[in-house]
Length: 365
Image (cartoon, rainbow, N blue to C red; front, side, top):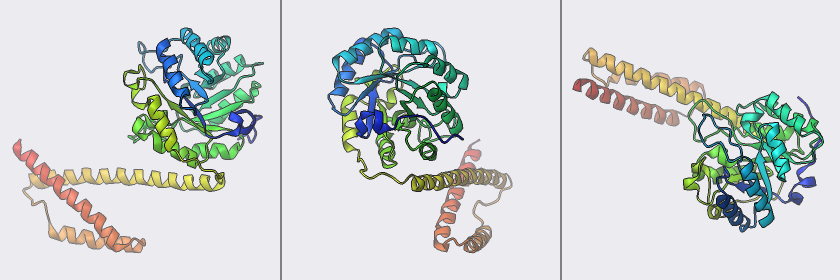
């Protein structure tokens, strides 16, 4: 894995080193009125330096709202004329780059669906040859740090030295609290490899829900990330895309005012190891829950078997043997007996309740 990117540090080119850098704006540019009104309300907060808006929307299925395209770029020109904010848009192919440059967009970003395809990234990189413009690169959909680094390298090889990474979380095949699981150990590892690389966190796409935004944003700052990209819409309840994760400019201001910025730089070696260990705990917890689900499924099967054979649910001898055996195993593993007893009792109580419900359900049939 490469150790070097020929890039400018955050302090050298972005925001005069004043962290965190705040990027905000609607998920999608929907109308001239929406774009301009949202921009003016965001600028009034005095905290947002870059105005983002989705112009071309890569949608999973056809016939969904796929953005206003070049028409919306004209609206962004007005944002630049009427506010002090720079503008940023997502590009997914060379034609997007050409149009964005034609209309004076200040910053480009590559989305997660683009980064997952090296051919697409290379085509965009080729179109940027000889161009001096900042480029932000989101992580790919899957948790593959090499793929993320490869995209950064391709853009850098095109002569772009104003580069930032955007962490927007990763797709996860299991149910999760988040829309995209953060897996913080990956951006921390990226920072460890490239200490000068600015990393912006996208709480909106990690969370998927506005009520989760603050905790993600605060953790990003606690990990000494360089900034936040948070989606804001003047009327998010009627937004064409991702309504649940967007904030009104007013609520964006409240969130930003509540954030605590850590003044001392974090120790990335420490943070990397900490997140590595926490990641292992997350994996073990997932395994515990999966095993517990399997155990309860087996409890259900035993309940049905007992009923068919007219056997009582609760059997004292079996429960006594379980306690004795499991507590002995736990003691040998150094687990506190009182703690393990509580867990076993909770599991046993749930097992009795499930089998009782099975009896009731089957007897109704």
